[in-house]
Structures are given as structure tokens and as C-alpha cells.
Amino acid sequence: MDLRQIRYFLTVAEELNITRAAERLHLSQPPLSRALMELEEELGCTLIIRGKRHITLTPEGLALKRRGEQILALADITKTEIADV
Image (cartoon, rainbow, N blue to C red):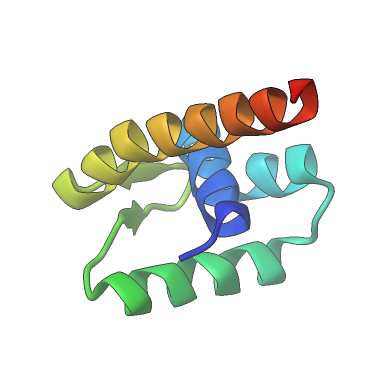
């Protein structure tokens, strides 16, 4: 799991729509869907339930959303601290 995958997942979790998330990330939909499937495969669980018009986060997806937000915030703080040194 890398920061890019976490950013992609969090964008999908915010939009609750893969097409809108792809637009926001300036990607086409297939690479975003592939990245999500790879993340699910790596974690060994389903993170989202894909519906016709929107997605739903599974309990595992909700957990990753909470922790992913913390991870990205910590990464941003670390970049700022390193730049200030």
C-alpha cells in the first residue's frame, strides 16, 4: 500500500462515485478501478461495494478511510517538518 493508493481510495470514499473521483484525480476510470482492486487484493478484503450509480464503503473501507486520512495528514506534517529543517 502506498500514499497514491490511499489518496485514490480517499477520493473515491469522498465522492462515493468512481467516475467523479477519476475526474477529480485527472485519471480515466479504468486505472482508478484497477488501483482500487489492487489495494483490495493486497489487503485481502473488499473496501467498496460498487452500485450502479454510487458506491458504499464496507466496514473495512470505513476503517481504511479513517486511518488513511490520518496517514496522509501525517505525511503532510512530515514533509513540512523536513522542509523547515
